[in-house]
Image 1: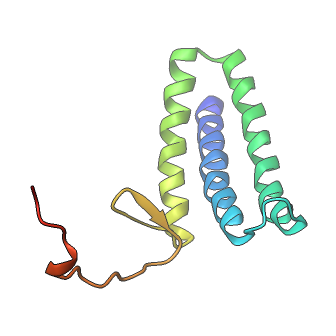
Image 2: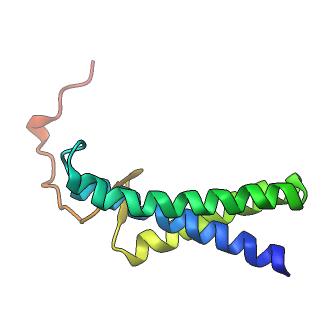
Length: 113
């Protein structure tokens, strides 16, 4: 039971911090600024806590269980947290907001050879 909760904890920490680091990096455009560190550093440090727990799990439970379960849960929690925080995915890309593109005119499409 403890290992199941640990799997869920690692997956939720990694899943949430993936989204928070991406959103923080998008907010602070200047990568070398203090604002960038303020937005990215706290989720990064929390991600390191999740990594420490993951390494503890690796030493105490079988590898064949830890790695696939935590990776699957990380993907699931990343999807959940990105939806909750308003990240929208379309056409294989993710955007913080939805943008509507005007339709292509037939004259802007190059003729095929």
